[in-house]
Image 1 (cartoon, rainbow, N blue to C red):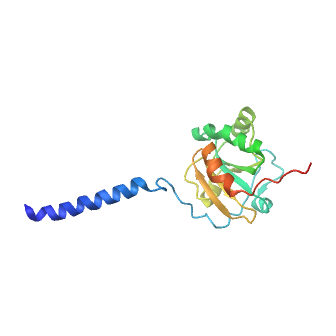
Image 2: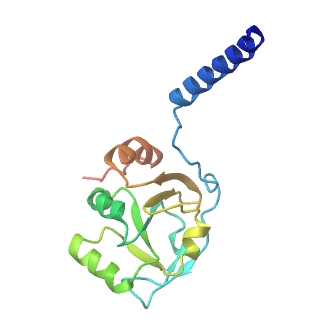
Image 3: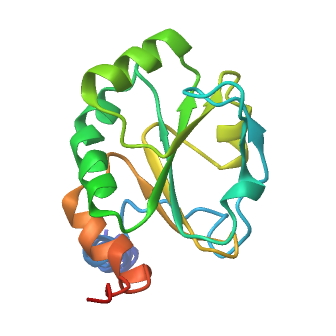
Length: 179
């Protein structure tokens, strides 16, 4: 009986140390994107609101933008929509939408009813583009710098906290207007 106490005690100690480490980990629940620090995927996709002009990644280079993956079927996308409108009103960064595996008519209706926070909306009917971005589930938002490098990924509905703590500090300071 005593010969089992030492291995059992060591096991319990290791379990406690691992449990405390996991509990205190600042990044628990964070899924790190393999795109961070790498070029954003190149694409040319149909434009939801202006079918005559496709949305091309090459046209987005040279400026900061948030790339937001959404769909009308996504409950959390509806929950984050007011925040996206706030981001648009702030004027701090362009907001580009990727309507993912959705019906165009329903997506247009959604934007008409709730307001359109996007500068432009690319359409990904097949889901292929979302795979290239490493999307797990909508909504997901990527911050891309002017060089086309993904610098931040937010999984889930964009919140005021994520906007102020994670995105705004990564953006350059606003340019003061000359009076």
